[in-house]
Length: 385
Image 1 (tube, one colour):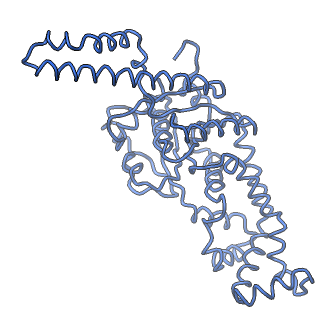
Image 2 (image 1 turned 135 degrees about the horizontal axis):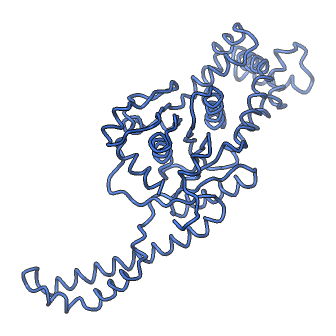
Image 3 (image 1 turned 60 degrees about the horizontal axis):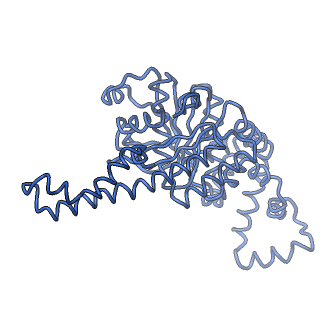
């Protein structure tokens, strides 16, 4: 890092909400957990990491057993076992989409009876948690709820993998639009009036023959009851949108330098800028180490390749047949030079990407999987560097 460049630690120290986003398989969940753990250790923050990853390995790494909607604290003893003394606290929760929807219904229904009718509606029970962009909206909803509670100094959100940045960023708008949509008015028409219009009557006559009266009644009742929550949902969606644009919120895009995730990461950064969100940082995982671009080591590799026969002869026959030793030395030199070419290309790609976010962090390959808090903190120290 050059003098004067901002670090991820400085960025997170100045924020209350960090939204980690990116495509699947790039280490986004692990990166979010590692950054949250480091915030608890070095910033002294009471930090919540909210993840949507159902994988058990994260819960195992944090030592909190089964994660769910209820926030759970990572035991201070786990940090001691990892060899650190945190000044803050680390809490974790995993998004349960169905339970979160149930809580939203209870919160926004005009009365308990309406909430109970929605929750017991057959259509709701089958589709809750499967709405289009439901994960994206619920993740932002849970973020808003946790931030409004005032229980945490910092909240790190691990968002669902997304193939379309706009879908995620526009989730609050999409939810508000849904409640005001013509589709909703059309679906609730039979329940609002027994006098169907000439335009809609043929549709419902055909649908009734195909789907059955009970199904249509469930559909109409469900959407009609849902409309009773319009004001609450719309106000909440607007509040979530304002929170995402707030100066206390920043976005961290996680990617690798492989072509597909890199393209998606670049698209996400452009989308953040276009929609006036704060593109705080870009984290590039699995980057080759800097020593592969060391000119002295490159010169040594060239010498090793050129002088392999002489070096093999110099070490003597105790190591192995001179021809075989020379071949191994040549292969080692070629391997170093090949990796060096890739490392230089990665450095150029990183320089081009660094034009948008405040912070760009390169995280090297790790030889082993991260399976405990010590591993998360090891990754976290790379993020902080």
